[in-house]
Image (cartoon, rainbow, N blue to C red; front, side):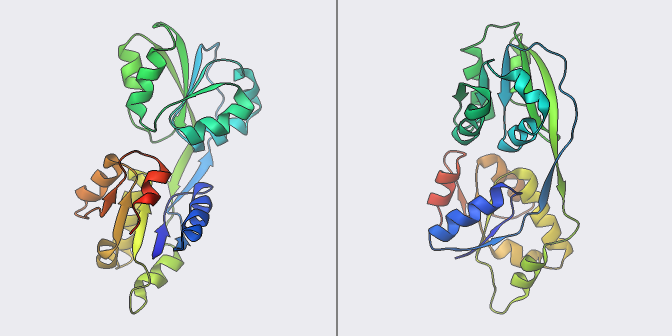
Length: 235
């Protein structure tokens, strides 16, 4: 299949390579650009570090302040983020990819009242911070990056939509925001119908809900929010 990868870099290129290895034809054309904010870390010390995305980790590790966090308990939302963090920050406890479940893992490891640093993006879900705050933890949020939407539908996607017969079969969606932006840009470019006709593969129910709200049906939703599970559903 010819598959549009709309997620931002650096993950988009990696996903494209995996698709090619599976025999698909990837069209890597992100609709979001990740930019570090350059903001200073909140004052510590901290009893634990929470990472809810690999992009947040990348932005954190690019700073000189990251070294000050080495050695404190680190909790990562999923195995990939955990693996990337371990080499630079020490031992990491990995979640299953679900932010709410990550809150439970933190509660089982750190006593209430602890001060925790949540490194995240400008647009983020309320979890795990909401549950941890309600349970008595002190959460300091560091906005490490912002994901900015591109101005127009990427040219390769526009050309693929305009091809006769259609030059795209499917799209992979890794976040609700990228799914919404991909839909909005397709509509603005006059290719809303072509977008809706794609097979849409979603990393989670939350991502699929963003498409559903726009009247676009998801073809497949991964049982767990992991790329392995998402790619396993391609058909």
